[in-house]
Length: 595
Image (cartoon, rainbow, N blue to C red; front, top):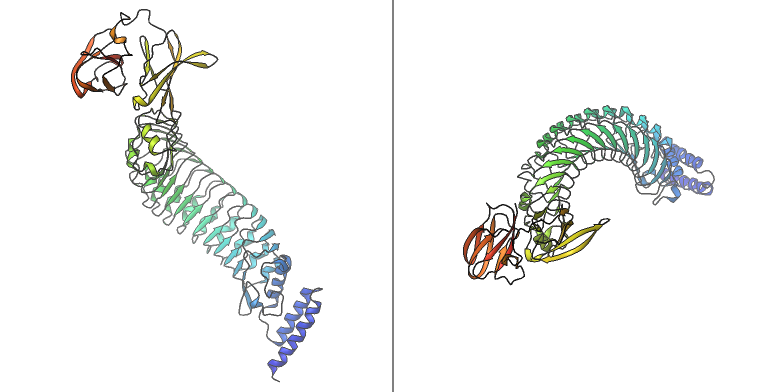
């Protein structure tokens, strides 16, 4: 019998004996096993390493792990599930999502050659053992997605070879150790979704090899250190959802590789530094939900790869700068104090634009050149007609409400974007011309219904009269009136006039009640549009007609011969109520001229 066979027989006898007693004193017999093998068959691992693994097994409920194959068995430790061994020393522990339940033993510090401790997504609790700071060969420390609590031990900062530090999704509290800058080889620092407080240490700027700084969803306060501008290789700065205050360091503009800058949901104040325009590789900038003020720097839209810029929920003022250099898809400037008109160019590829709840005014014709999927300009002072959007049927969200729009263009919106929101527009002026009240609501006149309401008492209005295709009313007596306008196509919009106190003139403007100009119930043989009109009045007749525009005193202001279709220039006529009379038939239509 050779020596190898003899050793196998001895080994088998020892293991059999161990199995009889393992339930009583597991750790002592395991130590006996290791020592025996060390003296007979050349042990596979260091004794201290073996004991540390036993401690890990016992302190984290090893029998109920999802996979504990070969653990505390007679198999070589290198075959234990999740264990890597190199030159008789444990160099890797990888037990992710394995239902480890309990605390980490301090004896893990005895694994002097350990390079990778990979224990994410378990039920580990308690604090991180300070003794882990002795694992000077550790390069990967993954403890994320557990239930660890307490402070990050400052001893962790002794791990000068550490490249990956994952502590996210725990319940860690306290401050980030000021000596964090000692980890000069660190590439990824993930500590998000914890309860960390205090300030970000200025020593963070020493992590010159850092690729990603993820500290979001904590309770960090104080200012962002300017030293953060030293992280010349960083790709992502994720500091959102904290309590950070002070200004945004202009040094951030010195980060040539930065791809994502997310500082949203903090208490940052002051101006947005123009140096952010130097971020040549940035694709996402989120500064929303802070207390930033001042104007939007024109340079911030200059980065050539910028895809999304979110500055909403701040106190930014002044006008929107030129966006002609912006090539991204998302702009969100909502909930600020921006004023003035839209810039002449809003970029070429913007498909999501949020300008709601500002003080912007003027027309929105610029928007008609873009293909939108989402557009919200509600809560401003925009007016004028609504442009036809090239991709109206593809718009997923459109909100034009709470502006100064009328029905002009709304009919087209109602037909092409059925889910559009466009109600609650500012009350329009009501025109008082002697014995008449009228409004200019836009839209197709034949689709409009006008209702004259009179205030009675306690804010209650009663319906006095209803007109179709005609906005002109003759109130019966003095009172407080308001006109309500509905449109049969743009059913989502109800317009109201401003409230007016009306008193009938003491002397009738039109001399005789028999005046033919009052015969508004005659069948008209010509069509007038738009009505109310501003500069040009278009007319369609059945054949030839001599049409005269007459004021309320009966004076002829303009006469025109029209056959079929024609127009009358009214740009020089004072706004008010007039009558257009067919001199050949005597038929009359009321015409409202507005500016």
